[in-house]
Length: 145
Image 1 (spheres, one colour):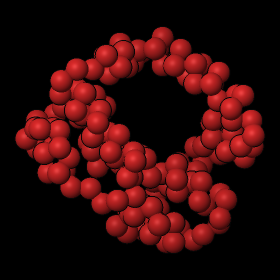
Image 2 (cartoon, rainbow, N blue to C red):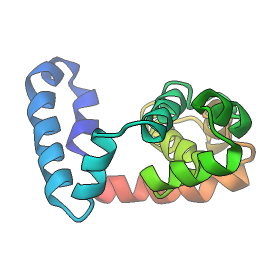
Image 3 (cartoon, helix red, strand yellow):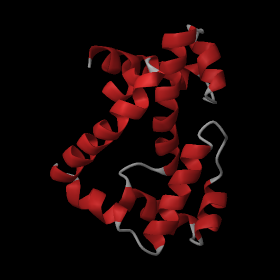
Image 4 (cartoon, one colour):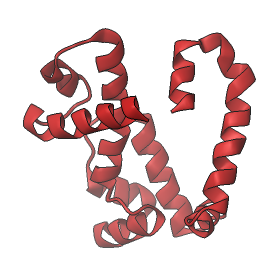
């Protein structure tokens, strides 16, 4: 949450974000998922190709995705790609992409105040009924946190 708040003061980012990143890394590595995070950081082979697919999803989170294309790019069958993706993150590729879209939707709603429908359209949700419960829960969670 503190990292997100830095967006309100861009001049503070170079001074504060590096220490926040170190702190987040510490808590991640010392927590329950530390060994899994370490495995991801030290990934080889299929894990490395899965990480590349995750980078593609982050870079193009607004674009529609085709799992077949991601699997082909990773040199895996669709079934292997799904299994491998879930071994790196507990989410499917589509769920992962949705998790990337929610912070952007929150930022848009809090800064630009568009309607939920406009926001859903801009972050490429298929329908507002699919989008609305997730973004409202996310905005509430982050606002209270």
